Image 1 (cartoon, rainbow, N blue to C red):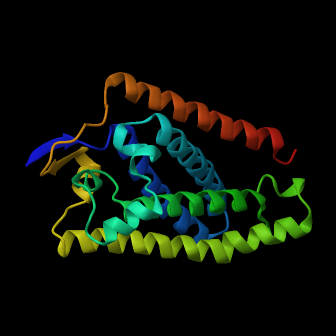
Image 2 (spheres, helix red, strand yellow):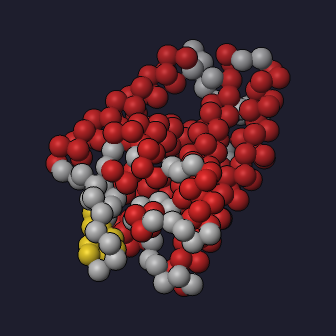
Amino acid sequence: MVKVRIWDLPTRVFHWLLVLCVVALVVTGQVGGNALDWHFRLGYVVAALLLFRLVWGFVGGRWSRFLVFVRSPLVILRYLRGQGSPDMEAGHNPLGALSVLGLLAAGLLQVGSGLLSDDEIMHSGPFSHLFGSDWVSIATSLHTRYNKFALIALIGLHISAILFYRFVKRHDLVRPMLTGDKALDVPVEPAQDSVFTRLAALGIFAALMCGVWWAVVRWGPV
């Protein structure tokens, strides 16, 4: 067994910040009232986090890049038949890649629909006034029902897969996301995780967070 740096620090920080924000969003969304102000603020943070993950999927550490872990349908089929190469287990395996893409897509749709939604009581998304009532109604239904339940289902599948790997296949997927390192049977190219890449990631996230906040202030209600 050889220990290899698979998950760079920016990827790990993104992952756990997203987990904390999602939990807080669920709580503030259920409490309602004044807690919805924090629900919106957390939504802006999640928007910046998801956008960061998209950017980091192209410029981040090797095993965080889409071009490395997103596989073709034929490769996925071979993996399901047990014909996958050893490096497929280093980062996200082909099925895990589908889970990542599904969670990112559903997360972005949830954030986007929240920006347009309107509860017709006290709170409305900052961009809801820019669109017609039909679009706002669709966005509200997506945010509070359809995409919300789809996102919950995807999160449930994600957690189930982690538990399956932990207790059935005896592979701990949580520890590597905490430490960044993974014990592998076959050595693979490690992810770059230097001070420079970490500072670059911080700069990218800061720029995206400022961009999200600027958009809300610029295009939100006067």
